[in-house]
Length: 124
Image 1 (cartoon, rainbow, N blue to C red):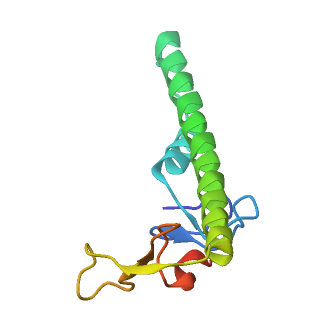
Image 2: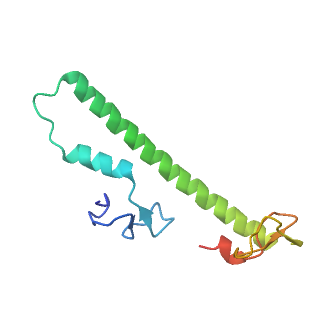
Image 3: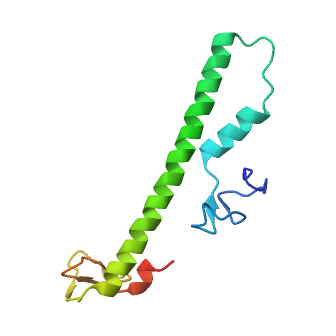
C-alpha cells in the first residue's frame, strides 16, 4: 500500500504528514488507495461512455468519503480537547466503575463528568 501524501509504502500507518495539523500519524485507508488506483489505471478505448461515467461517479464518491473522514477526525479531536478541559475544570467525585474488569487501566469514574480518573487518557 502506498501513502497518497508521500508515496511511502507501508502496511497501515504513515507518519509523513500532519493531517490538517491535528495528528502526526494518519492511516492509509482504502478510499485513498482506490482513488490512487483509479488515477493510475489507464482507461482503455473499449470502455463505453456509461462505464466511464460510473467510474467518475465512483471516484467522486470516494473523494466525498475522504472529506467526511477528515471532518470526523477534526470532530474527534475537538471532543478530545473538550474532555481534557472538562477533566481539568471539574470538581471530581470519584466512584468505582462497577463495569470495570480486574485488569482495566482505570477503575474509577467521576460521578459529575463521567470521565475516568486517569488524566493521561485525555492527553495526546
